[in-house]
Image 1 (cartoon, rainbow over the protein chains, first blue to last red):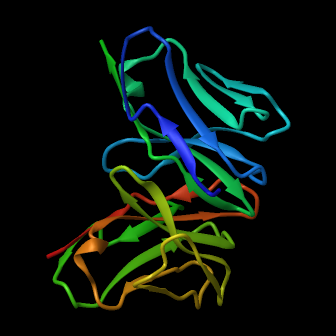
Image 2: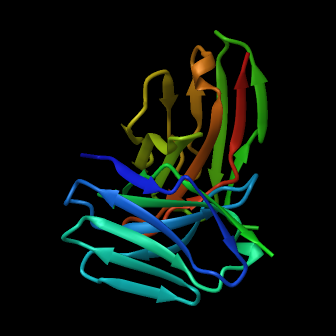
Image 3: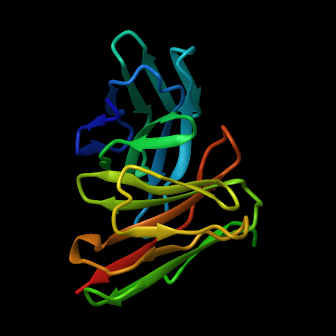
Length: 110
Length: 111
């Protein structure tokens, strides 16, 4: 019940395309859903986050879509750029502790 | 610069040895966390601390010990290192109910 499942494991997108990463969770007690971006040799950095009372949140080219009934949420990166090439982690939080998905390695080709 | 720093960045040791990974933050955040990152598993919580002298187990605590005598420091000790503990270790800190901020990690290899 504590798992967060993330897909795909890797993703290749052309510059200007849309990148979509999906996550699913089981525990309905989770109350905070962040996405982290990680570059090689660096720690994860918060990208965007959402709470379950909202179905969508947009920040620049990054959008989280949240489906509470399906217990799924996804990250959409519009107009993907080579600089977006990184590993992305979804996570779910309850009482401040994060449960991470397995990660998605995104490569944006010029 | 203020922030969260981990040391060492790289460490090679042998099985059975004790090794301590250091984490220091300058934000005075009350919460601190230790994670390990392994391919296919994402990041898994080892231990966390809500305040000085308060620590609790996470998802994968076996083989690890933590302490928090000062708010700014949260060392992680492997008392008798095993090969399965070869990993990249990340420390994070936060204020209650706010996003966690991560350090740049310690890459630990156990031979």
